[in-house]
Image (cartoon, one colour):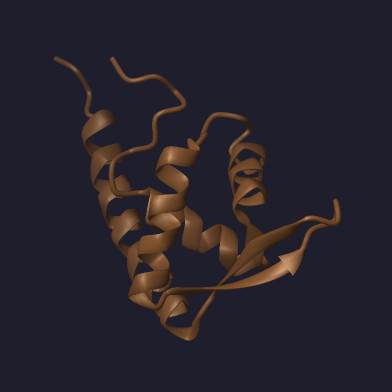
Length: 111
């Protein structure tokens, strides 16, 4: 049985792209924002977050820049690229189709 904090496989890229579409953030802030926006239902471990960010950067969907945080520490801030915005649109549309299909099945009347 899955736990509420488990992310549906394949949705992490979509969630990260959406969060970064709102504003550039460093890794720890991305993790906090996901938890906050989801009402503390969704959480991502560092072991999943940073490889996913690296992959998104390799794809050209996000870019990274070293900056100073609000706590006066250096951190890599990630932001969405133009390619990333297009990928976000594609992934969001795909998610809508999938989640609508799943909702139709779940709402079927039982015999």
